[in-house]
Image 1 (cartoon, rainbow, N blue to C red):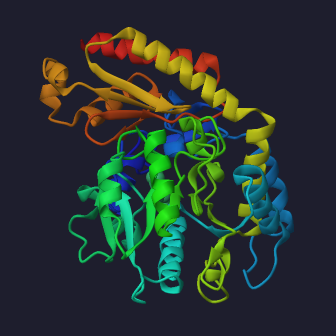
Image 2 (cartoon, helix red, strand yellow):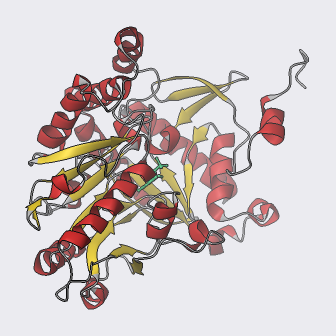
Image 3 (cartoon, rainbow, N blue to C red):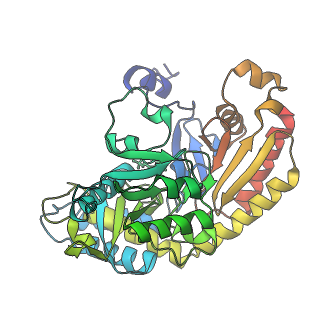
Length: 428
Ligand SMILES: Cc1ncc(COP(=O)(O)O)c(C=O)c1O
């Protein structure tokens, strides 16, 4: 109980909320830009941004305008009709984000967007079967990938800890080592229908695809008529310094996937997912038409409110130069943190504002607090940073992610670097 007799928020969680997350004892109440305050009025610098979601930061005027205005007209209407905002958002994604002819479908989350990609691949494997006429059903994805928590998303994901205990999983997925061109070329068979990858793996610990690997994947897809599917749910919409995350990897502008999934930053905090399907042949028809009437759907997907939010996010990312901002701040962070040469850090890597700090467990083993905690390095460090006023996100056992709002400024980055350096020095 709190002093006024109300049940404390932590107790509400302990008693009533399913324990699916390892939660920090932080109770956020209010946010502005990159700052967040908890129930006790304590200020944090929010470099997690709801795990790469609050791309415009907290309480951005462009989003407040949408939330104040659009519900007065229409919050929701069925996909039995043609809400104009959905069409406008689809046009913005096709023409401004991807810049190539195609069509979009709207969902409410990332894992649902990926389910759509999986269904698209299954249909494609039916209409463009193997030489003997059997449908092609195998989707190739990669170790350390994360594609969501639905049964399809889990099956696509290349991490045992996400999948274990939920079998039998959906059939038809093969996981190969990431960035291994030879393994990819060797694994493609008559049964293969698609390659699904995150250009920058997020949950797996910030691993960048190499340009060579992306080019090889695109070449294999061309040669064997496979679909190239990019999961840009975490790395897209400006996070890596480009609207299309893979464009930031360098010399990859010529690579064109067949479909792309988005969520997270596209909604800036409002549940919104989407996928784009390239306009290209597929059997007798065109690829976007494989998901014809009745083949796929979502009650809420692309509602008037969600679409207005998505349009405001895309417009703001362009108008405020947030891709350029992310690219420049990312360079600053990498240069500064690598320059420390800190003994507790084994590597700092990333692209734009998607940055991973990998900790050296052997060096941490000399730190009594760490040993006493009995926790993985990533969780121990995330706790230590939160205690110092900086919110970050763990990825795997050793990596701490920075995924700040794209509206972050040089001052925010300088403050986060200073907190990080002080925490590290305190421990070392
Ligand atoms: C690359 C990637 N794909 C899919 C997902 C699943 O998205 P959601 O949690 O919105 O279902 C995530 C979420 O972290 C992600 O990072």
